[in-house]
Image 1: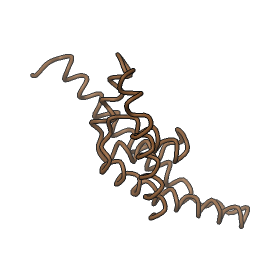
Image 2 (image 1 turned 90 degrees about the horizontal axis):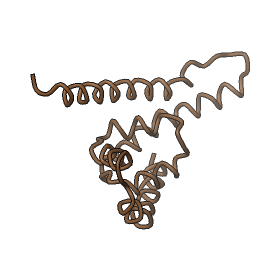
Image 3 (image 1 turned 90 degrees about the vertical axis):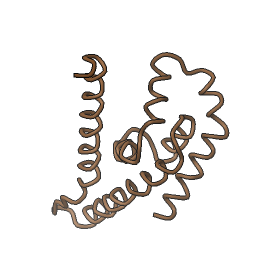
Image 4 (image 1 turned 60 degrees about the vertical axis):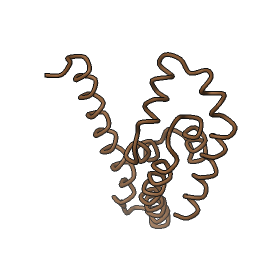
Length: 136
């Protein structure tokens, strides 16, 4: 977990130093909304992105650095997401060493990512609905 935290911090810092100004100057329209979404997300948003197979760990860290995301929620979410992922890798490794036995623990990271995604989608849907319909 320490190595995951260090790797996340380095990737985020590189993205912030090398890419944030470039991205901030060019975001318009939907990209600006996406950048705003990253800036508003808390630890749960980071955990969701980390647990979904979107891109490698380093690329996600760099990408977050180029957005308006805050560093502390990003790092906390990265460490939380690294725990089940490390556990899943260990379970998959154990399954390879003993073929024929299904290890259901290997599905834990994907399950956590799915649940976190559903929560975020529900929150987004409610916010959009509230925005469109106005206050009741």
